[in-house]
Length: 469
Image (cartoon, rainbow, N blue to C red):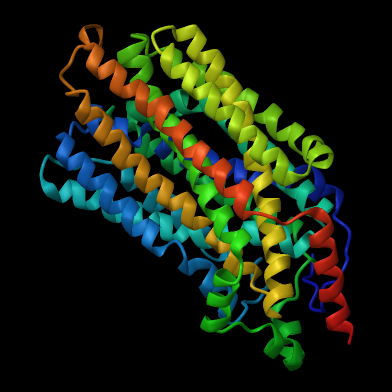
């Protein structure tokens, strides 16, 4: 199909494809990244068998660099010259194809020297840099295609449902693909094979997003043909800083989003340790992944209904508060495995809701920013979603290593002989620390995020009036 080289309509309605299938790219992305979330630390400690200080060095260096770079992707996309298929949409195909080749080496150990650790760090940083451009562009398209709060909520909800569905598939697919890879490249490197396979799927499904968004964004040709619009839309470094500094709701949301992602990634990272050393039944890990992510899907599916009834802001605050209480209860009953699975499933149901809600909240801050500053910083603000995501990954590695150290962990410990000290330390990381993070998030959103639907609609109307003036 030929590309549309004219300006996209201001209010082009969402297509049926977008309403139903936007999020399949996130399905592929999360299927790929879940290898890291669930098994990276486990690969380093139990398969590659690096010493705990080396594991801490690998995870901290890789995630810290990733976090420090997290703010630049939206800034580059927002301020650079648009490519052939548009400022944001082009990134969905420009770079993802490199990812599978780099990402696989994050789970491969060559020899026993420090060189192997360095290779893993380099592969982790390089693969994340490549996929972050596509990730930011993909999230930015929610605000580009969704012109109303209802449209943005629709896209965010559908995206969340597909994202969480990937984890259900992952619970079945990951062990099968990893086992198949082990037969070819060995057990130590089996997650490298799985990372490559899921990375290829990510590339294919992001291309599907690229096709779905055709016609929703000005192409490079249209932007060049209209110099006035080009100059008006161009954002300087000062404009980008103003979009953050003069946006208190955005700052509050970034802190709350950090807590949300900390909950997710820390729980994912500790799951393998909990079921091996506390429950003494590693076979429950894929069962846990399956059950909790089914709850996630249901939560994401219901998020739009709850947001329409209680508002996106109030839904997010209320659900996070309930999650925190549930996690605390789970910690005090951490030796009761069935109770933990049930409570964690309910908590992950809440994560499905908040995961679907937060992109719509970012969309509200984008509208507020343009109303406040007169500049559209959609790419920059959407890119800032990467900051809490990446900082949470960094803190995950630090918290997991710290909790394991507090429990006197060693890969040589027989899981059946795990001490109460180790079990308590793992359970604290699995449940108690995420609960504290969520309590902080509730406070930030309650007192820092004051945007309501009526205010956002008013700001959007005033922005349209300015453009027509």
